[in-house]
Image (cartoon, helix red, strand yellow):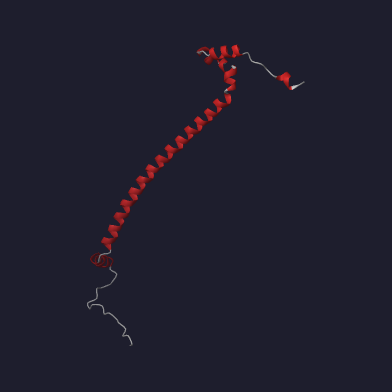
Length: 126
């Protein structure tokens, strides 16, 4: 057998009539999928379907990231306000009057010195 024996010839008028014969009935019955024009376009249709699925998946992923970003922004705002509150409480507690009050409440036994501290200096030799 030669390679010419396997060649199938399609009548151009028959193919044209098949393309024209697309109807709602052929779509619902499924017979449209056996037509030569549709079979020839199947790889392209498959490619478009895969592209659409990729696009839908990519959109869902992007929406999930946007929701996560919104939650993280809210958390950052909450942590910033908590940091400001904690810093102001620390500044309030570290004031000398507050330290004296806390020492008296805890009965640690520390007292304020009655004489001011002396500054020690070392004389330089010239």
